[in-house]
Image (cartoon, rainbow, N blue to C red; front, top):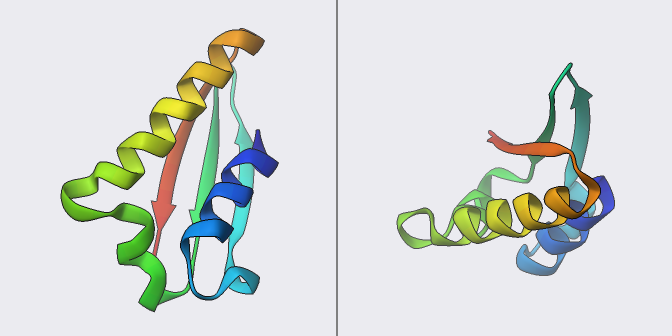
Length: 76
């Protein structure tokens, strides 16, 4: 799942080498922390958060197939 988020983020930003995804595993939920360059933050979030919402939807759908719950946090 980490590779999925990383691949999506790298295709959206201008500086793909600065994309970092960290996986924090909890009891019921796995949190994926996404970091990008400050100038690329708007590209990952999108207008009114539509791009971020779309990434979260893909993550939820893929997580259902694996019977796990994933959350995406976009960090500055």
